[in-house]
Length: 263
Image (cartoon, rainbow, N blue to C red):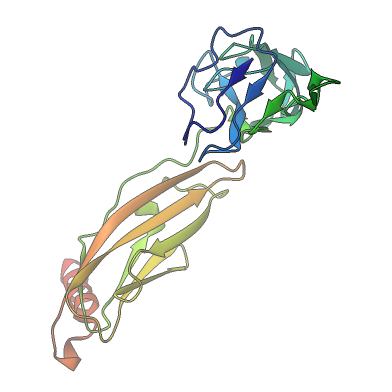
Protein backbone atom coordinates (compact mmCIF):
# COMPACT_ATOMS: atom_id res chain seq x y z
CA UNK A 1 0.00 0.00 0.00
CA UNK A 2 1.19 3.52 -0.84
CA UNK A 3 -0.60 6.35 0.95
CA UNK A 4 0.26 9.83 -0.36
CA UNK A 5 -2.93 11.45 0.86
CA UNK A 6 -2.67 15.10 1.95
CA UNK A 7 0.97 15.67 0.98
CA UNK A 8 0.58 18.97 -0.95
CA UNK A 9 1.49 17.24 -4.20
CA UNK A 10 0.70 19.24 -7.33
CA UNK A 11 2.25 16.77 -9.78
CA UNK A 12 3.87 13.36 -9.81
CA UNK A 13 7.44 12.99 -11.10
CA UNK A 14 8.22 10.94 -14.17
CA UNK A 15 9.12 7.35 -13.36
CA UNK A 16 7.55 7.45 -9.88
CA UNK A 17 6.02 3.98 -10.20
CA UNK A 18 8.75 2.42 -12.31
CA UNK A 19 9.63 -0.98 -10.90
CA UNK A 20 6.70 -1.07 -8.44
CA UNK A 21 5.02 -4.15 -9.82
CA UNK A 22 2.80 -5.24 -6.90
CA UNK A 23 1.09 -2.08 -5.74
CA UNK A 24 -2.30 -3.17 -4.41
CA UNK A 25 -3.49 0.15 -2.93
CA UNK A 26 -2.76 3.78 -3.81
CA UNK A 27 -4.30 6.85 -2.17
CA UNK A 28 -3.57 10.27 -3.71
CA UNK A 29 -6.56 12.17 -2.33
CA UNK A 30 -6.45 15.65 -0.77
CA UNK A 31 -3.50 16.93 -2.79
CA UNK A 32 -3.54 20.08 -4.97
CA UNK A 33 -3.09 17.93 -8.08
CA UNK A 34 -5.97 15.57 -7.29
CA UNK A 35 -7.14 13.79 -9.34
CA UNK A 36 -3.79 12.89 -10.86
CA UNK A 37 -4.32 11.83 -14.46
CA UNK A 38 -2.29 8.93 -15.82
CA UNK A 39 -2.17 9.14 -19.60
CA UNK A 40 -1.46 6.15 -21.82
CA UNK A 41 0.22 7.56 -24.94
CA UNK A 42 0.85 5.84 -28.25
CA UNK A 43 4.44 6.30 -29.42
CA UNK A 44 6.44 4.97 -32.32
CA UNK A 45 9.59 3.30 -30.99
CA UNK A 46 11.56 2.49 -34.15
CA UNK A 47 11.64 5.77 -36.12
CA UNK A 48 9.92 9.08 -36.70
CA UNK A 49 6.12 8.68 -36.95
CA UNK A 50 6.08 9.45 -40.69
CA UNK A 51 8.93 7.10 -41.69
CA UNK A 52 7.91 4.26 -44.08
CA UNK A 53 6.44 1.21 -42.39
CA UNK A 54 6.12 -1.24 -40.91
CA UNK A 55 6.18 0.72 -37.66
CA UNK A 56 6.76 -0.46 -34.11
CA UNK A 57 4.23 1.15 -31.77
CA UNK A 58 4.00 1.01 -27.98
CA UNK A 59 1.94 2.56 -25.21
CA UNK A 60 3.91 4.58 -22.66
CA UNK A 61 3.09 6.26 -19.35
CA UNK A 62 5.42 8.96 -18.02
CA UNK A 63 5.08 8.14 -14.32
CA UNK A 64 5.05 4.39 -14.87
CA UNK A 65 1.86 2.37 -14.62
CA UNK A 66 0.55 2.20 -11.03
CA UNK A 67 -1.66 -0.74 -12.06
CA UNK A 68 -1.77 -3.13 -15.00
CA UNK A 69 -3.58 -1.95 -18.11
CA UNK A 70 -4.73 -3.80 -21.17
CA UNK A 71 -5.73 -1.43 -23.92
CA UNK A 72 -7.53 -2.17 -27.17
CA UNK A 73 -6.44 -0.29 -30.27
CA UNK A 74 -8.15 0.78 -33.46
CA UNK A 75 -6.41 1.76 -36.69
CA UNK A 76 -7.33 3.51 -39.93
CA UNK A 77 -5.02 3.01 -42.89
CA UNK A 78 -2.99 0.27 -41.18
CA UNK A 79 -3.10 -3.35 -40.09
CA UNK A 80 -1.91 -4.17 -36.58
CA UNK A 81 -0.04 -7.27 -35.44
CA UNK A 82 -2.23 -7.27 -32.30
CA UNK A 83 -5.50 -5.60 -31.40
CA UNK A 84 -4.47 -4.88 -27.80
CA UNK A 85 -1.37 -4.06 -25.78
CA UNK A 86 -0.64 -4.74 -22.12
CA UNK A 87 1.18 -2.27 -19.88
CA UNK A 88 2.19 -4.10 -16.69
CA UNK A 89 2.23 -2.30 -13.35
CA UNK A 90 5.57 -0.64 -12.72
CA UNK A 91 6.49 -0.38 -16.41
CA UNK A 92 7.00 2.83 -18.42
CA UNK A 93 6.17 1.28 -21.80
CA UNK A 94 4.42 -1.80 -23.12
CA UNK A 95 6.04 -4.25 -25.50
CA UNK A 96 5.63 -2.82 -29.01
CA UNK A 97 3.35 -4.14 -31.70
CA UNK A 98 3.72 -3.63 -35.45
CA UNK A 99 1.62 -1.46 -37.75
CA UNK A 100 1.61 -2.13 -41.50
CA UNK A 101 0.51 0.51 -44.00
CA UNK A 102 -2.32 -0.54 -46.30
CA UNK A 103 -1.60 2.09 -48.93
CA UNK A 104 -3.44 5.03 -47.42
CA UNK A 105 -1.77 8.42 -47.30
CA UNK A 106 -1.64 8.21 -43.52
CA UNK A 107 -2.49 5.77 -40.76
CA UNK A 108 -4.23 6.77 -37.56
CA UNK A 109 -4.03 4.68 -34.38
CA UNK A 110 -5.91 5.29 -31.15
CA UNK A 111 -6.65 3.64 -27.83
CA UNK A 112 -10.34 2.84 -27.70
CA UNK A 113 -10.67 0.83 -24.50
CA UNK A 114 -8.77 0.00 -21.35
CA UNK A 115 -7.37 3.24 -19.91
CA UNK A 116 -9.38 3.09 -16.68
CA UNK A 117 -8.74 2.96 -12.93
CA UNK A 118 -9.46 -0.48 -11.40
CA UNK A 119 -12.80 -0.63 -9.62
CA UNK A 120 -11.91 -3.23 -6.99
CA UNK A 121 -12.26 -2.58 -3.26
CA UNK A 122 -9.86 -3.03 -0.36
CA UNK A 123 -10.25 -3.10 3.43
CA UNK A 124 -12.30 -5.55 5.45
CA UNK A 125 -15.76 -5.94 6.92
CA UNK A 126 -14.69 -4.60 10.29
CA UNK A 127 -13.04 -1.40 9.05
CA UNK A 128 -15.13 -0.94 5.94
CA UNK A 129 -14.50 -1.36 2.25
CA UNK A 130 -13.05 1.38 0.03
CA UNK A 131 -11.68 1.69 -3.53
CA UNK A 132 -8.13 0.41 -3.81
CA UNK A 133 -7.04 3.31 -6.06
CA UNK A 134 -8.19 6.78 -5.02
CA UNK A 135 -7.34 10.31 -6.14
CA UNK A 136 -6.31 9.36 -9.66
CA UNK A 137 -7.81 8.96 -13.09
CA UNK A 138 -6.64 7.26 -16.28
CA UNK A 139 -7.28 8.26 -19.86
CA UNK A 140 -6.03 7.61 -23.36
CA UNK A 141 -3.73 10.10 -25.00
CA UNK A 142 -4.27 11.58 -28.46
CA UNK A 143 -4.28 9.42 -31.61
CA UNK A 144 -0.96 8.67 -33.27
CA UNK A 145 -0.58 9.50 -36.97
CA UNK A 146 1.86 7.34 -38.92
CA UNK A 147 3.49 7.55 -42.34
CA UNK A 148 2.59 11.18 -43.07
CA UNK A 149 4.71 14.17 -42.03
CA UNK A 150 3.02 17.13 -40.34
CA UNK A 151 2.71 20.44 -42.21
CA UNK A 152 6.13 21.65 -43.30
CA UNK A 153 7.14 25.15 -42.25
CA UNK A 154 8.99 27.46 -44.64
CA UNK A 155 9.48 30.43 -42.34
CA UNK A 156 8.02 33.82 -41.47
CA UNK A 157 8.58 35.95 -44.56
CA UNK A 158 7.46 39.39 -43.39
CA UNK A 159 9.55 42.49 -42.70
CA UNK A 160 7.54 43.28 -39.57
CA UNK A 161 6.59 46.96 -40.04
CA UNK A 162 3.19 48.57 -40.57
CA UNK A 163 2.17 52.21 -40.39
CA UNK A 164 -0.31 52.66 -37.54
CA UNK A 165 -2.86 54.47 -39.71
CA UNK A 166 -4.87 51.55 -41.03
CA UNK A 167 -1.99 50.18 -43.11
CA UNK A 168 -2.51 46.70 -44.59
CA UNK A 169 -0.21 43.90 -45.70
CA UNK A 170 -0.87 40.56 -47.39
CA UNK A 171 1.46 37.66 -46.63
CA UNK A 172 1.02 34.59 -48.89
CA UNK A 173 0.60 31.36 -46.94
CA UNK A 174 3.16 29.79 -49.30
CA UNK A 175 5.80 31.92 -47.57
CA UNK A 176 4.97 30.23 -44.28
CA UNK A 177 4.20 26.59 -45.19
CA UNK A 178 4.91 24.20 -48.04
CA UNK A 179 1.66 24.23 -50.05
CA UNK A 180 -0.60 21.23 -49.47
CA UNK A 181 -4.19 21.01 -50.65
CA UNK A 182 -5.19 19.14 -47.47
CA UNK A 183 -4.17 21.95 -45.12
CA UNK A 184 -6.57 24.23 -43.28
CA UNK A 185 -5.33 27.38 -41.61
CA UNK A 186 -6.06 29.61 -38.66
CA UNK A 187 -4.44 32.93 -37.79
CA UNK A 188 -4.53 34.89 -34.53
CA UNK A 189 -3.04 38.13 -33.22
CA UNK A 190 -2.04 38.41 -29.57
CA UNK A 191 -2.88 42.13 -29.73
CA UNK A 192 -5.85 42.65 -32.06
CA UNK A 193 -6.31 46.19 -30.75
CA UNK A 194 -3.12 47.04 -32.66
CA UNK A 195 -3.01 44.51 -35.51
CA UNK A 196 -5.96 42.49 -36.76
CA UNK A 197 -5.38 39.31 -38.73
CA UNK A 198 -7.59 37.30 -41.09
CA UNK A 199 -7.25 34.83 -43.97
CA UNK A 200 -8.10 35.95 -47.50
CA UNK A 201 -7.54 33.84 -50.64
CA UNK A 202 -4.55 31.81 -49.41
CA UNK A 203 -3.05 34.90 -47.82
CA UNK A 204 -2.73 36.33 -44.31
CA UNK A 205 -4.18 39.82 -44.15
CA UNK A 206 -2.59 42.11 -41.55
CA UNK A 207 -4.40 45.35 -40.72
CA UNK A 208 -3.16 48.08 -38.41
CA UNK A 209 -5.90 49.70 -36.38
CA UNK A 210 -6.82 53.23 -37.50
CA UNK A 211 -6.35 54.64 -34.01
CA UNK A 212 -3.36 52.57 -32.91
CA UNK A 213 -0.14 54.13 -31.69
CA UNK A 214 3.31 52.57 -31.78
CA UNK A 215 3.48 49.00 -30.54
CA UNK A 216 3.80 45.44 -31.72
CA UNK A 217 1.80 42.24 -32.03
CA UNK A 218 2.72 38.60 -32.47
CA UNK A 219 0.90 36.82 -35.28
CA UNK A 220 0.58 33.04 -35.14
CA UNK A 221 -0.55 31.06 -38.19
CA UNK A 222 -1.36 27.37 -37.74
CA UNK A 223 -1.70 24.79 -40.50
CA UNK A 224 -3.57 21.54 -39.82
CA UNK A 225 -3.68 18.56 -42.17
CA UNK A 226 -6.44 16.02 -42.74
CA UNK A 227 -4.82 13.65 -40.22
CA UNK A 228 -5.09 16.23 -37.44
CA UNK A 229 -1.40 17.09 -37.30
CA UNK A 230 -0.52 20.76 -37.04
CA UNK A 231 2.41 23.18 -37.14
CA UNK A 232 2.57 26.88 -36.30
CA UNK A 233 4.62 29.84 -37.48
CA UNK A 234 4.81 33.02 -35.38
CA UNK A 235 6.22 36.43 -36.32
CA UNK A 236 6.13 39.92 -34.89
CA UNK A 237 4.59 42.95 -36.52
CA UNK A 238 5.74 46.39 -35.34
CA UNK A 239 3.67 49.55 -35.77
CA UNK A 240 5.09 52.97 -36.50
CA UNK A 241 2.70 55.85 -35.94
CA UNK A 242 2.45 58.42 -38.77
CA UNK A 243 -0.31 61.00 -38.06
CA UNK A 244 -1.04 61.92 -41.68
CA UNK A 245 -4.17 60.53 -43.23
CA UNK A 246 -2.97 60.37 -46.82
CA UNK A 247 -0.12 58.05 -45.84
CA UNK A 248 -2.55 55.22 -45.20
CA UNK A 249 -1.68 52.33 -47.45
CA UNK A 250 1.66 53.88 -48.42
CA UNK A 251 3.41 50.51 -48.26
CA UNK A 252 1.20 48.93 -50.88
CA UNK A 253 1.53 51.90 -53.24
CA UNK A 254 5.29 51.96 -52.81
CA UNK A 255 5.61 48.22 -53.42
CA UNK A 256 3.38 48.43 -56.50
CA UNK A 257 5.63 51.20 -57.85
CA UNK A 258 8.73 49.10 -57.32
CA UNK A 259 7.09 46.14 -59.06
CA UNK A 260 6.11 48.31 -62.02
CA UNK A 261 9.69 49.57 -62.34
CA UNK A 262 10.98 45.99 -62.17
CA UNK A 263 8.59 44.96 -64.95
